[in-house]
Image (cartoon, rainbow, N blue to C red):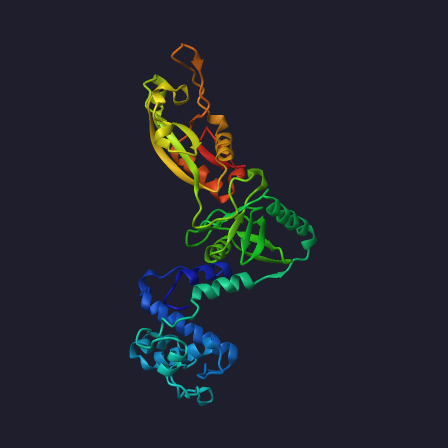
Length: 395
C-alpha cells in the first residue's frame, strides 16, 4: 500500500474492511499530499478513458485541466521526485507511450487564460474548478445506491412527512456538523428526503472512531448501505442539508431562516445566591431554566423580592439567543425533559406563606447544555434525564 495515508484513505480502507494501521513515520506534508491527490485524478482519468488527457477547446473542462496539470507535473523536478515511486503507468514520461501523447494546439498559459485562470497566480495543484478528492469521494459514496425492493412500506411515511412539512407539524433545521444520527431520523440531502431505517451494531474502528452500518432509504425509491460516518460526511458537505424534526415538537423552529431573522428571546440558566442550607450545599447543580423575550438582566433585577427566584439574588450562568422559536413551547419542553429533577423546596414569602417555585431543577449545567443541543438537532424525544447518574440516556 502507499507510504502516505490521509483521513480519506483511512475512511475508505475502513469501509472496505481492510485492516491496516497508519504509518506515522512516513507522513507527507500537505503540499505533497495535494500533489499526489492531483496525480491520482489524472491516473483515474487514464484508467477510465484509456488515454491521456488532451488539450483543446472541444475537450471537457476537467480533461483540459488534467492535461495542463500533467504538463506541469512533468516540468517540475520536485513533483517528479515525489511521484516517481507511484507512477506505475509511466505517465510522467511523455515518450513512454507515443499512442497516448497529448495534442499541443494550445500552450499552458493560453489554455489557462481561456479558462479564466492566471497562470502566474495558480500553481499546478490550485487550478480553479478542479474537484477535491473529498468532493469526489463524497459523491461516490452517495452514488452507490440500489432500487429499494420494499419501498411500498416506506412511501406512505415519506408522503406523510411531506404533508407534515406543508402543514407545519414538522419543521426543517440546519444540520449541525457531525451531529447525532439515530434510527428513524429524517434528513434532506442533495434535495432528497432521507430516512435512516436501520442501524447495525456499533463498533469502534481500528482508528478509534465509533461507527456502525446503516440502511438508508431515499424518497426516490432507492436505498444504500453505508457507514454512519459516511452519511455524516455527506450531510456536512451539503451546505443545504437539513434535519426534519419530529412532529411532537410542534412549531418550535421556523422552517424559514434568513440573515435578517429577528431574535425571539433567550433561554437563560440561573444559579441562586440564597443562604438556605440545602441550596448552599448543592448550589452548583441547582439551576433555574427559563425563556424570556426580553432582557434577562432586567428580568432578574428584583429577584430577592420574588418567590420565583427563591427570594434571593441570582447569578446568570449562561444564555442562548433564540430566533424563529416559539419561546413558550421551548420552555415547556425543557421543563418536561427535567421534570423528574424538579427542586422540591418550599420557602416562606414575606407574608410567611409557603411558596414552591416550579422552574428550579437539580441538574448539572453541562446536561442542560446537552439537552438544548439535542433540541436544536431535533433528537431530544429520543432521550430522558436520569437523575441517578445525572445524565441524558437514550430511550
